[in-house]
Image (cartoon, rainbow, N blue to C red; front, side, top):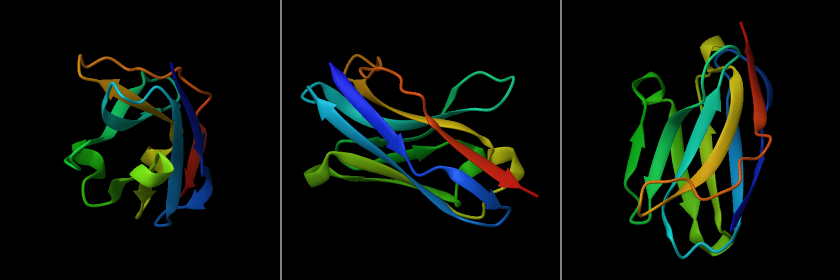
Length: 118
């Protein structure tokens, strides 16, 4: 089992920045990559950014150049630095980890709310 604790959300004006954190605990031996997801009102949850164990990152097009995913292996924590935030980034953000079989391993938490005002 893998446990996840997200933090760092909040209310920010358009153009502002926030950093989200995800602390990972439990059995992490099967973890291939770590990812941030988000769910906006009325929409399905979807991936935003992924970072693999070797540090390779991928982002959805709408956040490229504005968001940065990173990890601190010593702290078992990964982050999502969000800059130049837009109202359309408003969502509940979740983190999870992905196994070598491409399935999520962690129990979904409550997420952290990010609200960007115009």
